[in-house]
Image (cartoon, rainbow, N blue to C red; front, side):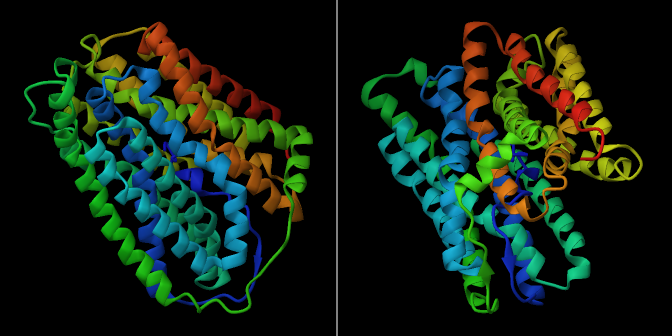
Amino acid sequence: MALAPGLASSTDPQPIEEHGPQVDAPGLNAFVFALFFIFGGITSLNDVIIPKLKELFTLNFFEASLVQFCFFIAYAVVGIPGARLVKRLGYMRGAVAGLVTMMAGCLMFIPASQTALFPMFLFAYFVLATGVVLVQIVANPLISLLGPERTTHSRLTFAQAFNSAGTTLFPYVGAILILGSLAKVSADELSGAQLAAYRTAESQAIVHGYLGLAAALAVVAGVVWLFRNRLKGEKHERTSLADGLALLKRPRFGYGAACIFLYVGAEVAIGSFIVSYLMQPDVLGLGEQDAGKLISLYWGGALVGRFIGSAVLRFVSPGLTLSTVAAGAITLILISANSTGVVAGYSLLAVGLMNAIMFPTIFGLACEKLGPRAADGSGIINVAIAGGAIIPPLYGALADATSLAVALALPAACYAIIAGFGIFARKPA
């Protein structure tokens, strides 16, 4: 997630402001970079899991999209309480709390597989996402403290590159491990005990994948715990929810927060169903595993586009750049929806390239000149990431009623509103 997201750059804003000493801990930096890689990959791995669960539980597109709903709704439910928890525990212990919660979510796939119940999988995703949100609340401020001030921007950029690398690699590996089933039957051909046994057996690939993630998270959590007392004298400002909500009255910030909601929703919606889209006979007609591998092109486009965009933004207005890439996304969607074969498939995958700079640019334009209110603004935008919980189910419902191609009108509409924001905010605040 799509980030993220993506869903990768959706880790940028954080609802905390901290004043305290900087700590030079190169070893911990390496593990925090690994953390960005892991939670970026975990978010994009949903795109591989969705078609698998859709087949196992014979779901329609709306029902399958509930995976993203349960994952991204955690941003709205946990975001603000999670920030308060981190303020109470401190960054280091807050990071450990998030990692342990992510581990718990990974381990919950074991009972989910054994019971062969779809709601159990959804609950596991919510717990996993709760940990991801806690870690995202901590990650960027923590990186900024783990080295000299002059290199903070470099470390944050480097960490985001690890995040994007995770969103690119995890779907490819996940497609091989999870979508490479050798089963000769499908769930809709079975019933009763045979169906339950099939679901349990076929979901073991999911379980094994998340057990591996749980082990990796345990290592990172252990290392962070060893450094738990390295930040001395942490102090956090106390802010209320009302302080953040008041910012929504500012047209520039309110419009920008809405665009974050729409952007994450559009990016996640396309990623969630791109496997099913590419499998259609009139698109690429691929098998499930081969289509799953191509998700890496969608998220990899965002990785490449981030480097291109960072260069372009040195010379071109952020608002104009945002409008241009949003218009590019709309154009690619229209081409895909009104064509077939390779053109239809790869034009939709190329939307990932257009997504690359959207989140940080929208965030920067919305929060421009907020000054001491920047932390409150970050908190509200962190909650707006919950667009990933709302737009995909709407896309799924529309696809059930029409087709996956026609339903692309929904993310196209989201990008149109984002293009409007770029024009609206083209001048400095």
